[in-house]
Image (cartoon, rainbow, N blue to C red; front, side):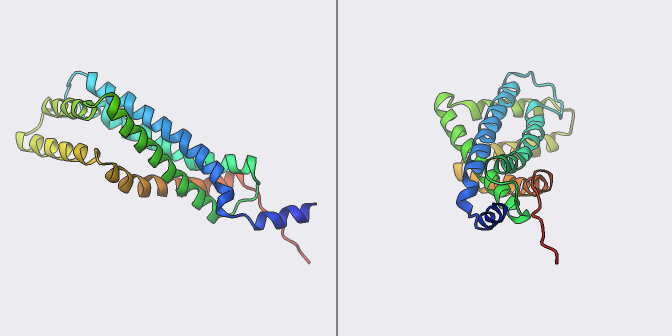
Length: 194
């Protein structure tokens, strides 16, 4: 029985990983979309204080920390549903693909949100620029920050830009957390000794 189980474990293909990838990527895609909206509307409704630590800046840190959990959750799900025997390379693959799925899910939800609130990005840009204008710094530096912020927010409106930057960034982050999760949740196969 144990020998048959070990032999079947060695024949795992990428299609065996997809349920865990889809579940974790889908859940975390929805979570980061919701967090992005919460922090976005916090920024829109906040008074421009000139503080560097605005809701928009804080959102990047929080979302990155939450996203980092996706690869580990995918490995945990895989070890509970499929097999506890996972190789490090398989963990890296599952983590990377989980990052890719969560980027696609959150990007699709972001695009759908623009049908609900078409002025969301414009309101966010105006609130962020108002906060920068309230900062106590030289005028030239303010202008540079405003131009940079406006350019970045306009680039994020493109679905291709979101995917182009998101997949490598979140994919690599989850590749690392996937490998860490293999060491935490995975089991090693018993090696035969003579």
